[in-house]
Length: 596
Image (cartoon, rainbow, N blue to C red):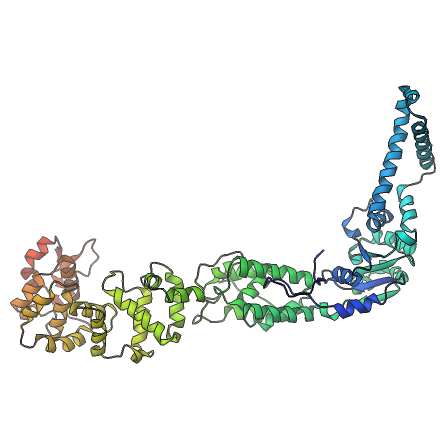
């Protein structure tokens, strides 16, 4: 029996524990009807809290005795079952005495045959003789044990004092068993308080229950507070506050339309506890969508399976409220966090522990430099952090965004696995004008100053700009080289920069500044000398940028004698001069050359 309306009505300490429903006034009104040994019919559907309501009504004044005849085997007499329920201690004593009488009666013959009576005291012999005669008379008169049960069951005074007999779920009892209940009701009518529990509407339609009306003195309705419309509005109002969310209206209406009762409330709330407390889904999912998924899981499992495991299948639903609930699940919320059901369905699986990050976990990452670096380098949290950044980055406070961009600056040169997806998104977002003027600015000069403040050398600055596609080589060359060269030659300046990281970027930017890309015949000896001093990785990168790398697929890095032209991008290119000038370096690095 479920506890729906507990006697202790204090606020539960567990935030997910069900609030008890206050039916105190209704209980007091019903108590006024008791004490006259009447038979009542308490009307309510199965699972609506009738038994608990009666227990609260009885309080300490009456002892509630519940008779669940629909659960018991029909071989037991209704009177015997009722006697056992109403007077369990007396029932045990009665059965014990009967067992002793039968045992002594059966033992009399073996005792006589073994001539043991002569060795026994006279009182014991008299007792055995009495038992034998008594059992024989009872058997001769065909007296059954339920005769004794009926005798003790109906005794007035101390035997029935303060007992309240409850015949639970009468409408679920088989018709032949109901006839036995009529006999019991007739037998006990006016002897004690009796409550028959069931759904009156279903009994009215059943011709077999016609005689029941003859025994009912008064019909009582379940309190309005326990009706589906009332319990679900109150339940979801409390749940919405606990989960800090707005419950979908269609879900509340569906609970009411389907006549979900207090037993359903317990079942659904247990699932709420499982998913939000035990599986810790709070912050990982959109609460309203998760609640809908839980409802479908409990009561429309086929729809649940299709939505989760066969998203491409069509749900042909005639139910308007179900259609609204499904629409709420599938609406486009790709630009929000936590991720919606339509974006990540696996998070919403029942029993599934989500792997995405909560808002509080993300805040922890943003406040920890080491964790933030791991997230930006996608060592950890990659998918969840990127989803959060893509949805919420532009809404973050200025100081937080500044910190994130500064971490990207500090690791971009040292960590070769940049740009990651998340770091690129952040830089591109800042470039697109999302309040970038607050700390970055849009001009190359401002970018240079910022990177210099992080200790970036010229080549590293150029590499950063190209890494995130912030500025073109042409823009970089036109900004740097008029100032850099001054009275110095290209090669003199090269000598000061060639030992830093990404020194090939210096040559590439200079060629762009002089408009010498691909124009091998116009390159001076200073340029050729600088190229010859590049490391293997730098040389390969330079060759790729200058369109000398083969366009065919090769297992290793390969150069081409002739690079095919690409319409509207560049013309067919002969690389003979480059290959001749760099012949020694190409051999040193064992780079293949092919003719395309």
